[in-house]
Length: 212
Image (tube, rainbow, N blue to C red; front, top):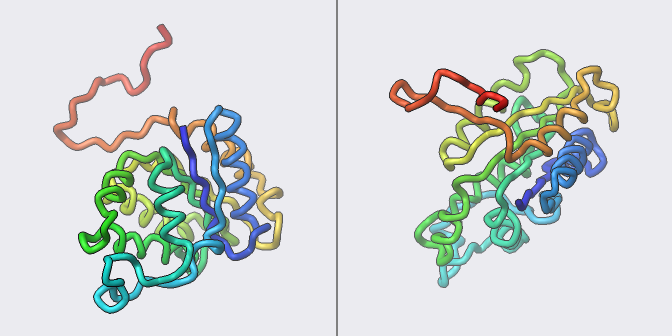
C-alpha cells in the first residue's frame, strides 16, 4: 500500500519530524511504499478567494508546489500520516493552509476536481503531535479537529500519537515512548480496527474475532 507522510513543521529536525520518521520506518517495516514530504517544500501560499485568483482555465492561481503534492502524492496514497507541532493549541500554519486549500481543488471550478473528489475518501489517517505540555487537554482540540476532518472526507482516523518535548530531540526522552508508538502506528495503519457506531449499525457483540 502507498503511504504519504507529511512533515508540517518548519523545523526539519524537530520533534514532530522524529515522530514522522518513526512512523515512516514502521510503515516500511510492514512492507508498504512510503513517501515522506516536507510541507515547506510545497505550500507557500494561504487560501485566497478563488473568485479572484483562479485562472481562466480553472487552475489555481497560487504558484507553488501544492497542486503537484496533492495530485502526485496525496490523492494516490492509501494512507496519510500527518505530523505537526502544537502551535497555539492547533496545527501548524503550513498544515492548516494545506487543508484549507483542498477547497480550491474540490470545487467544480477546478478541471481536475473529479479526480480529487474520488481520491480523498477511504484513506487511513494517522496523526502525530509534538507538544511541550504534558497536560492532556492541550491537544484535545486539535485531535477533535482531525477527527471531524477525517469524518468529513470519509477517511478513517486510525490513531493519534502525542510526544512531549520542546527542544530538538526531546521526544526521545519522553517516558511514554512516543517514537515507539509512532512506529507501531505506521506498522498498523492498515490493520488497526476503526469503529464509529450508530444506534442502527449492524454489529456482532464480539469486538475482536476469536483466534480460531
